[in-house]
Image (cartoon, rainbow, N blue to C red):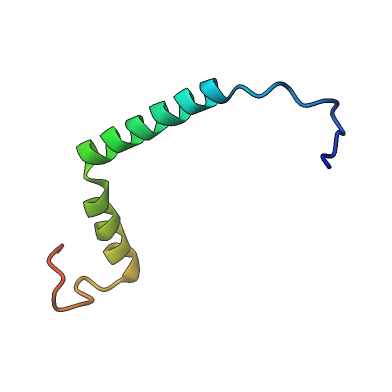
Length: 61
């Protein structure tokens, strides 16, 4: 049972939602490949931890 405080819900548009989700996924995947987000996430985490080399196998610094 849905709570209808604002009236009836608008008609669902699954095709438009799917297209938007695919565009968002493709955009984020492209940006992550271009910006090397994983490398910078590790660098930021190391900087925030206050420890430049927390593990002997760390090769980021």
